[in-house]
Image 1 (cartoon, one colour):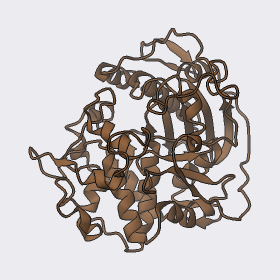
Image 2 (spheres, rainbow, N blue to C red; image 1 turned 120 degrees about the vertical axis):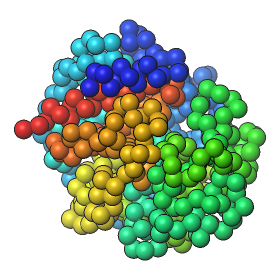
Image 3 (cartoon, rainbow, N blue to C red; image 1 turned 90 degrees about the vertical axis):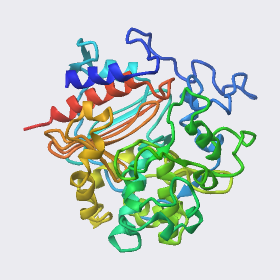
Length: 424
């Protein structure tokens, strides 16, 4: 694993946090949103950056509009426990030095961390005033949930991966980027788009995308138009055809959210509640952020408790089965794990990380010897599944920088080590 993570560090273009930093201060210690009225209020235009995100990621509904995802009226599923102290488990850090799991959790601004083995909670920690009942923003881990939700519609024939996007959303017929794209290309992010995800570039498409999702306040340019109108403005990259290469572009997931609504005939949040969330036996309702027109921000807006996301992840590990019922078709989980296009992966820098990997249905699949697959979000959000050792790991963080590649990949190295430590 050492060479893999050094490879990522070499690819990093964003300044990273020094590994020798002091213990990060909590939102309370910094006085963020403390007092009446708060003397240190957050900046609505920068709430997802440090230090404001130390508070904001746990208080999303107080900052931007959200829709509720009902857990239903059933009893919560019991999470069995067999505690195992993983704090001292050592792994190799990016500089080759040995680091403990506890060091990693501290240095990567962790808010919550949970490990399940065979569905049993073996390790669970909270920091920065987070509790088991606190919802936390998932950022782009949301994409993996959205891709899983789409599988229900594919399975029952309401969403055809081989169909054109415009078969479901005729409004995109004249859209430069999506007018001739297929549902499969959106699912696997092989659409050829002029779309930059460089969060540090004020002219990048992702910056305008965030404004359209209502993440930059109601006065931001384009905020009132909404995310679906924004999808119509994205240009096609005419240097290559759709379907040839994996290109990470968050707007794909919001188009997928639109497809889910059209195919299901329901609002995104209601469909998620009816088909998955109310069946898992979650402890709490979920939330998803919405734009100023009420459309779900499927690419990054899920807001869930740590344990409830762990339940969802365990369901995926168990081929869609959880709480004594088949919630997601097992064939869709198999499709995620085994049917990706490695050729589309090869032209990207991800190939240097996992040569046998691919991106399928909004999930990263490593192609490693354990069949590991995962979801990841900026500022250090992780959902890690190792089907060989039967381990699920969820990590919530509030890293100051969005694309802190060094600390994000540090988390991958730790989670890989943890999951492999349970091998027979």
